[in-house]
Image (cartoon, rainbow, N blue to C red; front, side):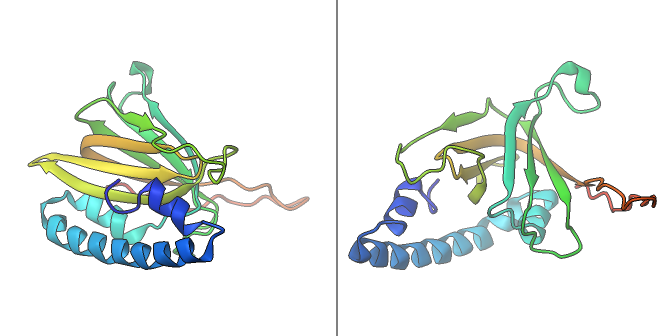
Length: 186
């Protein structure tokens, strides 16, 4: 993570008001710098990455993975990696009660690191905090995701697909409820 680093997040969450205030200003600068970076690289990114970036905010979404798919999961590729996120407060009201499957065609092995260990990171159920995309070289990209448990997931990929699935809710007593929802893939 170049912009939304775990170290900066820890300073932002500091109980020392001076440290937190300084970090808040640095956080605002990080947002501006990442927006400039995104604007510069976005024309070189696949349409699916631009679409995901523009249409989904997964902040505070529950996260499951990353997980490497096996050969039995065809038609997905044997070396693909998947992350599943459940947005609890989706940015778009038309996506309530959904799971978002992010499928990466990998260019290298995924890396999961814990660069800073601190009590401020919640070790129970991980949630999505912040993410960054970058261009490594033509046709190779990286998606880095900071999770609430302190992990940074680095996915170097060639292609990103995402799929939206509606969670089937229990029907009211004595009534069948049809399942509807749009599938989105890129």
